[in-house]
Amino acid sequence: MKKLLAGAAMALMALGGNAAQAQDYPDRPIMMMVSYGAGGATDFQARIVTMTAGNEDALGMPIAIINKPGAGGRVGWNWFATQAESDGYTLAAYNIPHFIAQSIKGGVEYSADTFEPIANWGADPAVFVVAADSEMTSMEDAVAYAKENPGKLTFSGAGLFVGHHIAALQLEKAAGVKMAYIPTKGGGAAAMKAVIAGEVMAGVNNLSDAFRAQEAGNVKILGVFDLERNEFLPDVPTMKEQGLDIDNASVNFRGVMVPKGTPQEVIDKLSATVPEMFANERVAKKMKAGGSPMHIMTREEVQEMWAARQATLEELLAGL
Image 1 (spheres, rainbow, N blue to C red):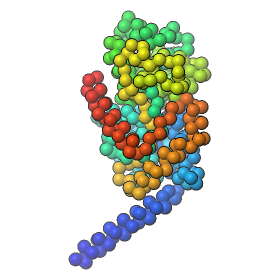
Image 2: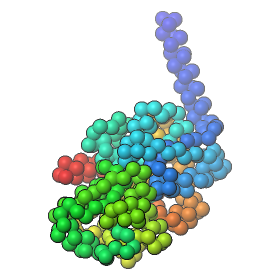
Image 3: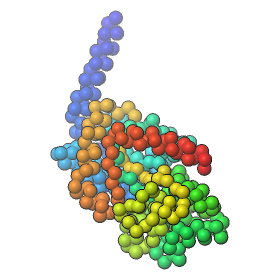
Image 4: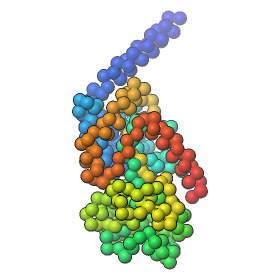
């Protein structure tokens, strides 16, 4: 009996300690893991949306970005799922549909149930790009070349079963063509460099990466993988407008998550604070200047989005 009472007392003390820690959270700097290399869209945006974290009206502590790139995000998310502390001091940037699609295909240590979403900051559609001096000026040109030269239109992307790859699979299916998708190491930045350097004929990339490259005069954007034109590219038609039956399944949602097992009090604190942090005017201005579309969502909205994307991707990947 004494052992039972002692055990109960220790459990209550532990709960009390966790509550006290959560109440004081955060009391030291926080780390956020990005599964892609420095300079890519996810890294670029993560550094912007966390820049006000140390303010008194935000978390009161800075967030430092650490990059763990490799295998289309698998290296970082596997580490986060298996080694990250669930104490609220190690966050991660998520990319949807990337990690959900990868978990559906298997061979990874994570799924949507492995993580707890906090908030979403952006929705970045995929776009089809070619070098600035390419003879292709529309998706009609690209599809015509692919039909005349099966398997010879090479185009880059940030990895396998990421938004770029899903867009590529959809394009091949909708156009009835076979193309040569070439995943690159180093994320979207490396995939864009491959297009600019002429290592591939075209590429599927994030709108935000492509926008900056087009502004610099390095590429042309031929089409957007979304249901509507984007405010950053009002003159670039969607795939549907160009006769290709492609929806928005490859749109790259980006946000913040924590490992499963993180104290609920910490999740609640982050869920209440992070969306407001994203909505900061300085953040919005920098994101707009970088051609990075914002789409702020609360924890509950992200949970619904994850579930919807899970269902969509299970159907899409089974068909492809």
